[in-house]
Length: 432
Ligand code: HGY
Ligand code: MN
Ligand code: MN
Image (cartoon, rainbow, N blue to C red; front, top):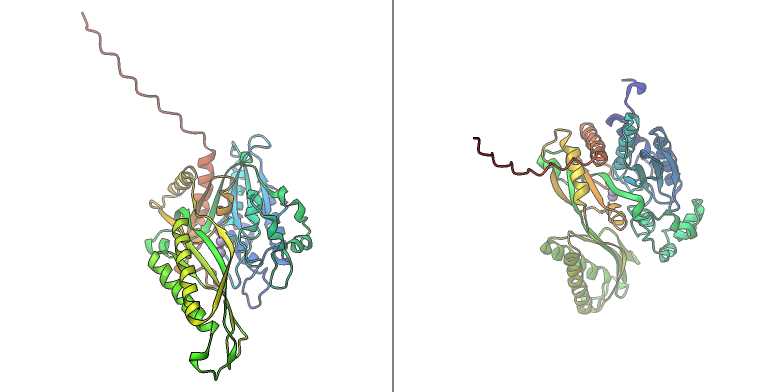
């Protein structure tokens, strides 16, 4: 097929656009890293904006740097059904996490616009600029601004170069004093639907292409610092206060405690000081990402871990300090919107979809503060994500786009007329 013959809203085109967006990266050799308020972010906003215009939308970049598009409903100014996901990435990312959801949303609006469907609400696509939190450590900055829950104290967050979030907005051409302009009112929204790769193995194990998210797990992230005494590597063991040996015990405690509680916890970042082969580490900084379906379970494990870390450090003559760097409560997806997604999936002859907990976080956790949310999951190979090997099948992207479009149509369809309540037939009159 020539390019001209590839349908703009088909899976092949969506995958080609994922490949095109993947080229906007600060990493060499085809690896992907694209962070909030960067030149790469600006470039993908412009590209996504062009695709939104092609799909019939008017476009703007909101005060938080989210790229937005809008297709009016039957009359201008109606509340909008939000569709979307995020365009930022983790370091050495895959090319579908977030990106696929933005492009499926654009394709669904394009198809609906082309069909001339009479829409009782507006459709908006939002490409969030910072779901991962890669640059400033706190996630969901773009979606928190849209939800009106952005904390101005976050403007003092700094990136690895010491640039503050405030200065990054300015460099991006935004005015951080106007962030409030990005906030949407509940009355202006009908709900939020997001398509996203599962980032887990369960759809593939079930032989399903699509699934529906029941709950998005709540997360808390921490920076943990263990302080000991740096010293000569000739020091006898009984005179050491080794921060790395203590941190290693803590990492084992984290895995054991979370596993026993049925939660998930990850130590993804570790820095050792002074980081020399013949010096006992005097300071270690590590991260903790703790998630659970229920916030109370997560918080109980954090309480146990805090006690356990203190005990390890007291025994070793170390000190430990912790600072929470990110927190987002678990979010139950809206039954109303889940039903629409289920109807969308049913229209594709896909088998009865699985209902899955999302252990990955998503922008829907922030958007849920201002409107109902629901998510469509798409199978990804081996459940691999946050890795260059992230992969989706063209046929799965095709059925996901069909289902997502059908879910929007299901919400736009007039409610089925209430069946007349059966009135008991009058008893037959006795015939003469
Ligand atoms: O961390 C997460 O779960 C998401 O990918 N940001
Ligand atoms: Mn991610
Ligand atoms: Mn994501």
